[in-house]
Image (tube, rainbow, N blue to C red; front, side, top):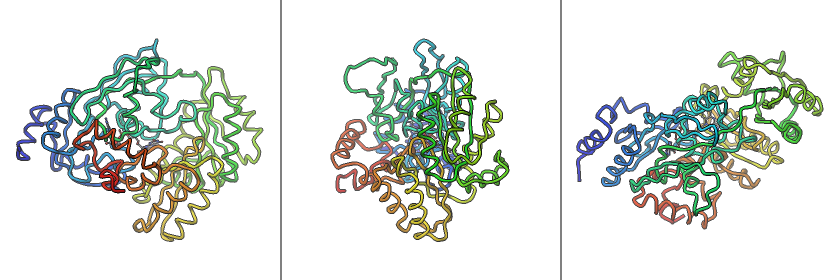
Length: 460
Ligand SMILES: Cc1cc2nc3c(=O)[nH]c(=O)nc-3n(C[C@H](O)[C@H](O)[C@H](O)COP(=O)(O)OP(=O)(O)OC[C@H]3O[C@@H](n4cnc5c(N)ncnc54)[C@H](O)[C@@H]3O)c2cc1C
Protein backbone atom coordinates (compact mmCIF):
# COMPACT_ATOMS: atom_id res chain seq x y z
CA UNK A 1 0.00 0.00 0.00
CA UNK A 2 1.35 3.43 -0.96
CA UNK A 3 1.59 6.31 1.50
CA UNK A 4 -0.46 9.43 0.80
CA UNK A 5 2.50 11.32 -0.78
CA UNK A 6 3.14 8.29 -2.99
CA UNK A 7 -0.51 8.24 -4.09
CA UNK A 8 -0.34 11.97 -4.89
CA UNK A 9 2.81 11.27 -6.93
CA UNK A 10 0.94 8.54 -8.79
CA UNK A 11 -1.87 11.03 -9.61
CA UNK A 12 0.74 13.60 -10.69
CA UNK A 13 2.31 11.11 -13.10
CA UNK A 14 -1.12 10.85 -14.79
CA UNK A 15 -2.34 14.47 -14.85
CA UNK A 16 0.79 16.53 -14.12
CA UNK A 17 1.71 17.88 -10.67
CA UNK A 18 -0.01 21.22 -11.40
CA UNK A 19 -3.33 19.37 -11.64
CA UNK A 20 -3.09 17.69 -8.25
CA UNK A 21 -4.33 20.32 -5.80
CA UNK A 22 -4.11 20.17 -2.02
CA UNK A 23 -4.37 22.64 0.88
CA UNK A 24 -5.47 26.17 -0.01
CA UNK A 25 -5.47 25.38 -3.72
CA UNK A 26 -8.14 22.75 -3.10
CA UNK A 27 -10.35 24.83 -0.83
CA UNK A 28 -12.73 26.27 -3.43
CA UNK A 29 -13.55 22.71 -4.55
CA UNK A 30 -14.35 21.67 -0.98
CA UNK A 31 -17.34 23.91 -0.34
CA UNK A 32 -20.52 24.21 -2.36
CA UNK A 33 -21.66 27.58 -3.74
CA UNK A 34 -24.35 28.04 -1.07
CA UNK A 35 -21.81 27.59 1.72
CA UNK A 36 -24.01 24.88 3.20
CA UNK A 37 -21.79 21.86 2.47
CA UNK A 38 -18.11 22.02 3.34
CA UNK A 39 -15.46 19.34 3.83
CA UNK A 40 -11.85 18.50 3.05
CA UNK A 41 -10.44 16.38 0.27
CA UNK A 42 -7.52 13.98 -0.06
CA UNK A 43 -6.72 16.00 -3.17
CA UNK A 44 -8.41 17.61 -6.15
CA UNK A 45 -7.41 15.92 -9.41
CA UNK A 46 -8.00 17.69 -12.72
CA UNK A 47 -7.62 15.29 -15.67
CA UNK A 48 -7.84 16.48 -19.27
CA UNK A 49 -8.79 13.29 -21.10
CA UNK A 50 -10.96 10.24 -20.62
CA UNK A 51 -7.84 8.05 -20.46
CA UNK A 52 -6.54 10.20 -17.61
CA UNK A 53 -9.89 9.92 -15.79
CA UNK A 54 -9.70 6.12 -16.14
CA UNK A 55 -6.13 6.06 -14.83
CA UNK A 56 -7.10 8.21 -11.82
CA UNK A 57 -10.09 5.97 -11.04
CA UNK A 58 -7.85 2.89 -11.29
CA UNK A 59 -5.41 4.37 -8.75
CA UNK A 60 -8.30 5.25 -6.44
CA UNK A 61 -9.71 1.75 -6.75
CA UNK A 62 -6.35 0.13 -5.97
CA UNK A 63 -6.03 2.27 -2.85
CA UNK A 64 -9.70 2.25 -1.79
CA UNK A 65 -9.95 6.01 -2.16
CA UNK A 66 -13.53 7.22 -2.61
CA UNK A 67 -14.13 9.78 -5.37
CA UNK A 68 -16.49 12.74 -5.65
CA UNK A 69 -16.88 13.81 -9.30
CA UNK A 70 -17.26 17.56 -9.63
CA UNK A 71 -18.40 19.69 -12.56
CA UNK A 72 -19.33 23.33 -12.00
CA UNK A 73 -20.07 22.82 -8.27
CA UNK A 74 -23.47 24.50 -8.65
CA UNK A 75 -25.39 21.51 -7.27
CA UNK A 76 -27.94 22.08 -4.53
CA UNK A 77 -27.86 18.85 -2.52
CA UNK A 78 -24.29 18.43 -1.27
CA UNK A 79 -23.37 15.74 -3.80
CA UNK A 80 -20.37 17.36 -5.47
CA UNK A 81 -18.14 18.25 -2.53
CA UNK A 82 -15.90 16.00 -0.40
CA UNK A 83 -17.72 15.75 2.93
CA UNK A 84 -15.81 12.63 4.02
CA UNK A 85 -12.25 13.30 2.84
CA UNK A 86 -12.79 11.93 -0.67
CA UNK A 87 -10.69 12.63 -3.77
CA UNK A 88 -12.39 15.31 -5.87
CA UNK A 89 -12.21 14.50 -9.56
CA UNK A 90 -12.86 17.81 -11.31
CA UNK A 91 -13.97 17.82 -14.96
CA UNK A 92 -13.08 21.52 -15.31
CA UNK A 93 -10.33 20.95 -17.88
CA UNK A 94 -12.46 18.77 -20.16
CA UNK A 95 -14.13 21.51 -22.15
CA UNK A 96 -13.92 20.68 -25.83
CA UNK A 97 -17.00 20.76 -28.05
CA UNK A 98 -17.08 18.98 -31.41
CA UNK A 99 -18.57 20.58 -34.48
CA UNK A 100 -22.36 20.57 -34.43
CA UNK A 101 -23.85 17.93 -36.72
CA UNK A 102 -26.62 19.95 -38.42
CA UNK A 103 -28.09 16.92 -40.18
CA UNK A 104 -28.56 14.78 -37.07
CA UNK A 105 -29.12 17.98 -35.02
CA UNK A 106 -26.68 16.72 -32.39
CA UNK A 107 -23.41 17.74 -30.81
CA UNK A 108 -20.77 15.83 -28.84
CA UNK A 109 -18.82 17.50 -26.06
CA UNK A 110 -16.61 16.72 -23.11
CA UNK A 111 -18.33 16.66 -19.74
CA UNK A 112 -16.75 19.83 -18.36
CA UNK A 113 -18.25 22.27 -20.90
CA UNK A 114 -20.65 24.72 -19.36
CA UNK A 115 -24.28 24.75 -20.44
CA UNK A 116 -23.77 28.29 -21.71
CA UNK A 117 -20.90 27.17 -23.98
CA UNK A 118 -23.06 24.36 -25.32
CA UNK A 119 -25.91 26.82 -25.91
CA UNK A 120 -23.57 29.18 -27.79
CA UNK A 121 -22.20 26.35 -29.94
CA UNK A 122 -25.75 25.31 -30.83
CA UNK A 123 -26.74 28.92 -31.59
CA UNK A 124 -23.73 29.39 -33.87
CA UNK A 125 -25.11 26.48 -35.92
CA UNK A 126 -28.62 28.00 -36.00
CA UNK A 127 -29.93 25.51 -33.44
CA UNK A 128 -30.66 25.52 -29.75
CA UNK A 129 -29.84 23.35 -26.73
CA UNK A 130 -33.13 22.48 -25.01
CA UNK A 131 -32.00 22.91 -21.39
CA UNK A 132 -31.57 26.30 -19.76
CA UNK A 133 -31.45 27.66 -16.20
CA UNK A 134 -29.89 30.37 -14.06
CA UNK A 135 -26.71 28.36 -13.35
CA UNK A 136 -25.93 28.05 -17.09
CA UNK A 137 -22.63 29.97 -16.91
CA UNK A 138 -21.04 27.52 -14.45
CA UNK A 139 -23.02 24.25 -14.44
CA UNK A 140 -21.47 21.62 -16.71
CA UNK A 141 -22.79 19.11 -19.18
CA UNK A 142 -21.58 16.20 -17.00
CA UNK A 143 -23.11 17.68 -13.85
CA UNK A 144 -26.45 18.30 -15.53
CA UNK A 145 -26.49 14.74 -16.86
CA UNK A 146 -25.53 13.36 -13.44
CA UNK A 147 -28.38 15.29 -11.80
CA UNK A 148 -30.82 15.14 -14.75
CA UNK A 149 -31.19 18.91 -14.51
CA UNK A 150 -34.51 20.44 -15.51
CA UNK A 151 -34.77 24.20 -15.59
CA UNK A 152 -36.84 26.67 -17.52
CA UNK A 153 -37.77 24.85 -20.73
CA UNK A 154 -38.85 21.42 -19.50
CA UNK A 155 -42.41 22.18 -20.62
CA UNK A 156 -41.29 22.24 -24.25
CA UNK A 157 -38.11 20.17 -24.44
CA UNK A 158 -38.08 17.90 -21.40
CA UNK A 159 -35.36 17.31 -18.81
CA UNK A 160 -31.66 16.67 -19.55
CA UNK A 161 -32.62 12.98 -19.87
CA UNK A 162 -34.55 13.86 -23.03
CA UNK A 163 -31.52 15.48 -24.63
CA UNK A 164 -28.98 12.68 -24.06
CA UNK A 165 -28.38 10.48 -27.09
CA UNK A 166 -24.94 9.17 -26.17
CA UNK A 167 -22.54 8.92 -23.25
CA UNK A 168 -18.91 8.17 -22.63
CA UNK A 169 -18.17 7.29 -19.02
CA UNK A 170 -15.52 5.77 -16.79
CA UNK A 171 -17.05 3.22 -14.43
CA UNK A 172 -16.06 2.67 -10.81
CA UNK A 173 -14.06 -0.30 -12.13
CA UNK A 174 -11.88 2.05 -14.19
CA UNK A 175 -13.34 0.66 -17.44
CA UNK A 176 -14.46 3.06 -20.16
CA UNK A 177 -17.89 2.61 -21.76
CA UNK A 178 -18.66 4.55 -24.91
CA UNK A 179 -21.99 4.76 -26.65
CA UNK A 180 -21.79 7.90 -28.77
CA UNK A 181 -23.30 6.91 -32.12
CA UNK A 182 -26.28 9.19 -31.54
CA UNK A 183 -28.61 6.74 -33.26
CA UNK A 184 -32.15 7.56 -32.21
CA UNK A 185 -33.32 4.14 -33.36
CA UNK A 186 -31.06 1.49 -31.84
CA UNK A 187 -33.01 -1.17 -29.99
CA UNK A 188 -30.13 -3.45 -29.18
CA UNK A 189 -30.60 -4.09 -25.50
CA UNK A 190 -30.22 -1.91 -22.44
CA UNK A 191 -29.69 1.78 -23.18
CA UNK A 192 -26.53 2.34 -21.13
CA UNK A 193 -26.42 6.14 -21.62
CA UNK A 194 -29.75 6.44 -19.78
CA UNK A 195 -28.25 4.73 -16.72
CA UNK A 196 -25.94 7.63 -16.08
CA UNK A 197 -28.68 10.26 -16.20
CA UNK A 198 -29.56 11.08 -12.62
CA UNK A 199 -26.86 8.73 -11.26
CA UNK A 200 -25.18 11.64 -9.39
CA UNK A 201 -21.68 10.26 -9.82
CA UNK A 202 -22.48 7.00 -8.03
CA UNK A 203 -21.90 4.66 -11.00
CA UNK A 204 -19.02 6.34 -12.76
CA UNK A 205 -17.76 9.57 -14.22
CA UNK A 206 -19.39 10.98 -17.33
CA UNK A 207 -16.50 12.17 -19.49
CA UNK A 208 -18.41 13.09 -22.65
CA UNK A 209 -21.87 13.06 -24.13
CA UNK A 210 -23.74 13.43 -27.38
CA UNK A 211 -26.73 15.71 -27.06
CA UNK A 212 -29.84 16.33 -29.09
CA UNK A 213 -30.35 19.91 -30.34
CA UNK A 214 -33.66 21.50 -31.25
CA UNK A 215 -34.82 24.08 -33.79
CA UNK A 216 -34.34 27.71 -32.86
CA UNK A 217 -37.50 29.66 -33.71
CA UNK A 218 -36.82 33.19 -34.93
CA UNK A 219 -39.38 34.95 -32.73
CA UNK A 220 -39.65 35.06 -28.96
CA UNK A 221 -42.13 36.81 -26.71
CA UNK A 222 -42.04 36.92 -22.91
CA UNK A 223 -44.93 38.06 -20.75
CA UNK A 224 -45.03 38.82 -17.04
CA UNK A 225 -48.59 38.29 -15.85
CA UNK A 226 -49.69 39.59 -12.44
CA UNK A 227 -52.33 37.45 -10.71
CA UNK A 228 -54.13 37.39 -7.37
CA UNK A 229 -53.26 33.83 -6.32
CA UNK A 230 -51.22 30.70 -6.98
CA UNK A 231 -54.39 28.90 -7.97
CA UNK A 232 -54.97 31.54 -10.66
CA UNK A 233 -51.39 31.00 -11.89
CA UNK A 234 -51.90 27.21 -12.11
CA UNK A 235 -55.10 27.60 -14.11
CA UNK A 236 -53.62 30.34 -16.31
CA UNK A 237 -50.69 28.02 -17.09
CA UNK A 238 -53.09 25.24 -18.12
CA UNK A 239 -54.88 27.62 -20.51
CA UNK A 240 -51.61 28.91 -21.95
CA UNK A 241 -50.36 25.35 -22.49
CA UNK A 242 -53.56 24.43 -24.27
CA UNK A 243 -53.59 27.42 -26.62
CA UNK A 244 -49.96 28.35 -27.21
CA UNK A 245 -48.13 25.63 -29.07
CA UNK A 246 -44.80 27.41 -28.69
CA UNK A 247 -44.99 27.83 -24.90
CA UNK A 248 -41.46 27.17 -23.59
CA UNK A 249 -41.61 28.31 -19.99
CA UNK A 250 -44.14 29.07 -17.25
CA UNK A 251 -42.46 30.27 -14.07
CA UNK A 252 -44.03 31.22 -10.77
CA UNK A 253 -42.77 34.05 -8.59
CA UNK A 254 -44.29 35.58 -5.48
CA UNK A 255 -44.26 39.20 -4.40
CA UNK A 256 -41.66 38.77 -1.64
CA UNK A 257 -39.19 37.05 -4.02
CA UNK A 258 -39.56 39.68 -6.74
CA UNK A 259 -39.06 42.45 -4.18
CA UNK A 260 -35.97 40.68 -2.86
CA UNK A 261 -34.42 40.43 -6.35
CA UNK A 262 -35.18 44.12 -6.96
CA UNK A 263 -33.59 45.05 -3.65
CA UNK A 264 -30.50 42.85 -3.98
CA UNK A 265 -29.70 43.41 -7.64
CA UNK A 266 -31.53 46.62 -8.57
CA UNK A 267 -33.65 44.71 -11.12
CA UNK A 268 -36.91 46.60 -11.46
CA UNK A 269 -40.35 45.10 -11.93
CA UNK A 270 -42.10 46.59 -14.98
CA UNK A 271 -45.16 47.38 -12.84
CA UNK A 272 -45.76 50.57 -10.87
CA UNK A 273 -47.19 48.59 -7.95
CA UNK A 274 -46.77 45.12 -6.46
CA UNK A 275 -49.04 42.10 -6.92
CA UNK A 276 -49.32 38.85 -4.93
CA UNK A 277 -48.29 36.42 -7.69
CA UNK A 278 -46.43 36.64 -11.01
CA UNK A 279 -46.38 34.19 -13.88
CA UNK A 280 -43.47 34.62 -16.31
CA UNK A 281 -44.05 32.88 -19.62
CA UNK A 282 -42.07 32.68 -22.83
CA UNK A 283 -43.31 31.62 -26.25
CA UNK A 284 -41.03 30.82 -29.22
CA UNK A 285 -42.29 30.43 -32.78
CA UNK A 286 -41.20 30.79 -36.38
CA UNK A 287 -43.94 33.39 -36.97
CA UNK A 288 -44.25 36.35 -34.63
CA UNK A 289 -46.46 35.09 -31.76
CA UNK A 290 -47.02 38.56 -30.24
CA UNK A 291 -50.71 38.86 -31.21
CA UNK A 292 -51.44 35.25 -30.33
CA UNK A 293 -49.87 35.69 -26.88
CA UNK A 294 -51.81 38.94 -26.39
CA UNK A 295 -55.11 37.28 -27.30
CA UNK A 296 -54.64 34.28 -25.03
CA UNK A 297 -53.47 36.42 -22.08
CA UNK A 298 -56.48 38.69 -22.61
CA UNK A 299 -58.77 35.67 -22.37
CA UNK A 300 -57.40 34.68 -18.96
CA UNK A 301 -59.64 35.46 -16.02
CA UNK A 302 -58.21 37.27 -12.99
CA UNK A 303 -55.26 38.97 -14.74
CA UNK A 304 -54.35 42.07 -12.74
CA UNK A 305 -51.64 43.44 -15.00
CA UNK A 306 -49.37 42.29 -17.81
CA UNK A 307 -46.02 43.35 -19.32
CA UNK A 308 -45.07 41.92 -22.69
CA UNK A 309 -41.52 41.95 -24.08
CA UNK A 310 -40.63 41.00 -27.64
CA UNK A 311 -37.10 42.39 -28.00
CA UNK A 312 -34.12 40.62 -26.48
CA UNK A 313 -33.22 43.42 -24.07
CA UNK A 314 -36.66 43.69 -22.46
CA UNK A 315 -37.10 39.92 -22.35
CA UNK A 316 -33.76 39.61 -20.56
CA UNK A 317 -34.89 42.23 -18.01
CA UNK A 318 -38.01 40.19 -17.23
CA UNK A 319 -35.99 36.98 -16.98
CA UNK A 320 -33.54 38.51 -14.52
CA UNK A 321 -36.40 38.78 -12.04
CA UNK A 322 -36.68 34.99 -12.16
CA UNK A 323 -33.07 33.93 -12.78
CA UNK A 324 -31.75 35.96 -9.84
CA UNK A 325 -34.10 34.43 -7.24
CA UNK A 326 -31.60 31.70 -6.29
CA UNK A 327 -28.65 34.00 -5.75
CA UNK A 328 -30.72 36.74 -4.08
CA UNK A 329 -32.02 34.26 -1.48
CA UNK A 330 -28.46 33.10 -0.80
CA UNK A 331 -27.56 36.70 0.07
CA UNK A 332 -30.18 36.69 2.85
CA UNK A 333 -28.56 33.68 4.47
CA UNK A 334 -27.55 30.09 3.79
CA UNK A 335 -30.88 28.55 2.81
CA UNK A 336 -32.37 25.15 3.52
CA UNK A 337 -33.63 24.07 0.10
CA UNK A 338 -36.57 21.85 -0.74
CA UNK A 339 -36.96 21.16 -4.45
CA UNK A 340 -40.23 19.28 -4.79
CA UNK A 341 -42.95 18.37 -7.26
CA UNK A 342 -46.61 18.03 -6.39
CA UNK A 343 -49.52 17.42 -8.77
CA UNK A 344 -50.58 20.72 -10.38
CA UNK A 345 -53.96 20.66 -8.77
CA UNK A 346 -52.37 20.43 -5.29
CA UNK A 347 -49.84 23.28 -5.77
CA UNK A 348 -51.79 26.12 -4.16
CA UNK A 349 -52.84 24.03 -1.15
CA UNK A 350 -49.26 22.81 -0.75
CA UNK A 351 -47.93 26.37 -0.56
CA UNK A 352 -50.43 27.33 2.15
CA UNK A 353 -49.74 24.21 4.21
CA UNK A 354 -45.98 24.24 3.83
CA UNK A 355 -45.79 27.89 4.87
CA UNK A 356 -47.81 27.28 8.02
CA UNK A 357 -45.85 24.14 8.90
CA UNK A 358 -42.53 25.94 8.50
CA UNK A 359 -43.75 28.84 10.66
CA UNK A 360 -44.98 26.43 13.33
CA UNK A 361 -41.59 24.68 13.50
CA UNK A 362 -39.41 27.73 12.90
CA UNK A 363 -41.14 31.01 13.79
CA UNK A 364 -37.73 32.70 13.36
CA UNK A 365 -37.40 31.66 9.68
CA UNK A 366 -38.38 33.23 6.36
CA UNK A 367 -39.85 31.12 3.58
CA UNK A 368 -39.25 31.89 -0.10
CA UNK A 369 -41.18 30.01 -2.76
CA UNK A 370 -40.81 30.11 -6.54
CA UNK A 371 -40.52 27.56 -9.29
CA UNK A 372 -41.41 25.91 -12.53
CA UNK A 373 -45.20 25.97 -12.18
CA UNK A 374 -45.72 24.36 -15.58
CA UNK A 375 -43.95 21.25 -14.24
CA UNK A 376 -45.59 21.30 -10.80
CA UNK A 377 -42.10 21.99 -9.41
CA UNK A 378 -41.64 24.41 -6.52
CA UNK A 379 -38.43 25.52 -4.83
CA UNK A 380 -39.11 26.08 -1.15
CA UNK A 381 -36.18 27.94 0.43
CA UNK A 382 -36.01 28.57 4.15
CA UNK A 383 -33.58 31.15 5.54
CA UNK A 384 -32.86 31.95 9.17
CA UNK A 385 -34.03 28.58 10.56
CA UNK A 386 -32.04 27.33 13.52
CA UNK A 387 -31.34 23.68 12.62
CA UNK A 388 -33.78 21.29 10.98
CA UNK A 389 -36.04 20.47 14.00
CA UNK A 390 -38.29 18.19 11.94
CA UNK A 391 -38.50 20.54 8.95
CA UNK A 392 -37.35 18.02 6.31
CA UNK A 393 -39.52 15.20 7.67
CA UNK A 394 -42.55 17.48 7.71
CA UNK A 395 -42.08 18.92 4.21
CA UNK A 396 -41.23 15.60 2.57
CA UNK A 397 -44.09 13.91 4.43
CA UNK A 398 -46.49 16.49 3.03
CA UNK A 399 -45.08 16.03 -0.49
CA UNK A 400 -45.42 12.24 -0.35
CA UNK A 401 -48.99 12.51 1.04
CA UNK A 402 -49.87 14.65 -1.97
CA UNK A 403 -48.39 12.11 -4.41
CA UNK A 404 -45.36 14.26 -5.26
CA UNK A 405 -41.58 13.84 -5.40
CA UNK A 406 -39.03 14.87 -2.78
CA UNK A 407 -36.59 15.78 -5.57
CA UNK A 408 -37.95 17.39 -8.70
CA UNK A 409 -34.69 18.31 -10.42
CA UNK A 410 -31.77 18.82 -8.04
CA UNK A 411 -31.21 15.17 -7.15
CA UNK A 412 -30.77 13.40 -3.83
CA UNK A 413 -27.10 14.13 -3.11
CA UNK A 414 -26.05 13.66 0.50
CA UNK A 415 -28.75 15.94 1.88
CA UNK A 416 -31.75 13.79 0.92
CA UNK A 417 -30.12 10.34 1.02
CA UNK A 418 -31.86 9.35 4.22
CA UNK A 419 -35.24 10.26 2.72
CA UNK A 420 -34.87 8.23 -0.49
CA UNK A 421 -36.70 5.27 1.04
CA UNK A 422 -39.76 7.53 1.45
CA UNK A 423 -39.92 7.75 -2.34
CA UNK A 424 -38.63 4.44 -3.65
CA UNK A 425 -39.96 0.97 -2.82
CA UNK A 426 -37.59 -1.59 -1.32
CA UNK A 427 -37.74 -3.48 -4.64
CA UNK A 428 -36.61 -0.37 -6.54
CA UNK A 429 -33.83 0.25 -4.03
CA UNK A 430 -32.67 -3.36 -4.39
CA UNK A 431 -32.36 -2.94 -8.17
CA UNK A 432 -30.53 0.38 -7.76
CA UNK A 433 -28.08 -1.15 -5.28
CA UNK A 434 -27.51 -4.13 -7.57
CA UNK A 435 -26.68 -1.82 -10.50
CA UNK A 436 -24.23 0.11 -8.38
CA UNK A 437 -22.61 -3.10 -7.21
CA UNK A 438 -21.89 -4.13 -10.83
CA UNK A 439 -20.61 -0.79 -12.10
CA UNK A 440 -18.82 0.24 -8.90
CA UNK A 441 -18.02 -3.02 -7.06
CA UNK A 442 -15.76 -1.38 -4.47
CA UNK A 443 -18.20 1.45 -3.74
CA UNK A 444 -15.67 4.19 -4.46
CA UNK A 445 -17.97 6.37 -6.58
CA UNK A 446 -19.63 9.05 -4.44
CA UNK A 447 -20.35 6.53 -1.66
CA UNK A 448 -22.29 8.99 0.52
CA UNK A 449 -24.59 10.18 -2.25
CA UNK A 450 -28.04 8.83 -3.13
CA UNK A 451 -27.98 5.87 -0.74
CA UNK A 452 -27.64 6.53 2.95
CA UNK A 453 -25.18 4.22 4.70
CA UNK A 454 -28.07 2.16 6.14
CA UNK A 455 -29.75 1.79 2.77
CA UNK A 456 -26.47 0.85 1.12
CA UNK A 457 -25.78 -1.93 3.53
CA UNK A 458 -29.35 -3.10 3.16
CA UNK A 459 -30.43 -2.52 6.74
CA UNK A 460 -33.05 0.16 6.10
C1 LIG B 1 -28.40 30.11 -10.01
C2 LIG B 1 -28.69 28.64 -10.10
C3 LIG B 1 -29.86 28.21 -10.69
C4 LIG B 1 -30.13 26.84 -10.81
N1 LIG B 1 -31.29 26.46 -11.42
C5 LIG B 1 -31.52 25.15 -11.63
C6 LIG B 1 -32.69 24.73 -12.33
O1 LIG B 1 -33.52 25.53 -12.72
N2 LIG B 1 -32.85 23.41 -12.53
C7 LIG B 1 -31.95 22.47 -12.10
O2 LIG B 1 -32.16 21.27 -12.34
N3 LIG B 1 -30.86 22.84 -11.40
C8 LIG B 1 -30.61 24.14 -11.16
N4 LIG B 1 -29.50 24.53 -10.46
C9 LIG B 1 -28.68 23.49 -9.81
C10 LIG B 1 -27.43 23.01 -10.57
O3 LIG B 1 -26.98 23.98 -11.48
C11 LIG B 1 -27.69 21.69 -11.28
O4 LIG B 1 -27.91 20.68 -10.32
C12 LIG B 1 -26.55 21.24 -12.20
O5 LIG B 1 -26.98 20.11 -12.90
C13 LIG B 1 -25.25 20.92 -11.49
O6 LIG B 1 -24.22 20.91 -12.46
P1 LIG B 1 -22.69 21.05 -12.00
O7 LIG B 1 -21.84 20.86 -13.20
O8 LIG B 1 -22.48 22.29 -11.25
O9 LIG B 1 -22.54 19.77 -11.07
P2 LIG B 1 -21.88 19.67 -9.61
O10 LIG B 1 -22.54 20.58 -8.66
O11 LIG B 1 -20.40 19.78 -9.74
O12 LIG B 1 -22.26 18.16 -9.25
C14 LIG B 1 -23.59 17.79 -9.08
C15 LIG B 1 -23.66 16.25 -8.93
O13 LIG B 1 -23.26 15.62 -10.14
C16 LIG B 1 -22.08 14.82 -9.95
N5 LIG B 1 -21.25 15.06 -11.14
C17 LIG B 1 -20.78 16.24 -11.59
N6 LIG B 1 -20.12 16.08 -12.75
C18 LIG B 1 -20.16 14.74 -13.01
C19 LIG B 1 -19.64 13.93 -14.06
N7 LIG B 1 -18.97 14.45 -15.08
N8 LIG B 1 -19.86 12.59 -14.01
C20 LIG B 1 -20.56 12.05 -12.99
N9 LIG B 1 -21.07 12.76 -11.97
C21 LIG B 1 -20.88 14.09 -11.99
C22 LIG B 1 -21.46 15.30 -8.66
O14 LIG B 1 -20.72 14.30 -8.04
C23 LIG B 1 -22.71 15.70 -7.87
O15 LIG B 1 -23.28 14.56 -7.30
C24 LIG B 1 -29.20 25.88 -10.32
C25 LIG B 1 -28.01 26.32 -9.71
C26 LIG B 1 -27.76 27.68 -9.60
C27 LIG B 1 -26.48 28.11 -8.96
